[in-house]
Image 1 (tube, rainbow, N blue to C red):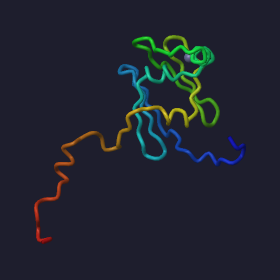
Image 2 (cartoon, protein in one colour):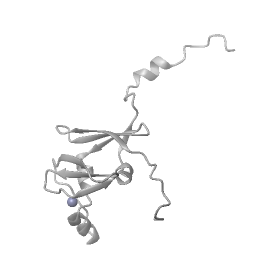
Image 3 (spheres, rainbow, N blue to C red):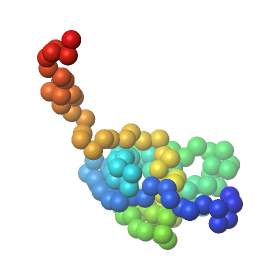
Length: 128
Ligand SMILES: [Zn+2]
């Protein structure tokens, strides 16, 4: 919380892909991490005034089943604003906060285990 002490060099989203049918959001970060975030999780992390008030009152935020992210817009240089299908439209997500959400990361190459098999070094070829 030192004003001016930070250079704001954290990772930034390079690309957002909103998969409306599957209800998940894919974020490609500038440090080559790709995060896959279910819309439901985003909704439960909503920090609009209503959700913050509920959290302060001790109510866990539970997203309605089937909730979707309807739109995403930039909100200042380091924040995204999400509009959810259940009417929450003031959820502001600073990049740092988005990045800290407990999501699965995905390596760029995909989740293909067969590739590992192929990449296995072929048996001893004269190293011994
Ligand atoms: Zn909310």
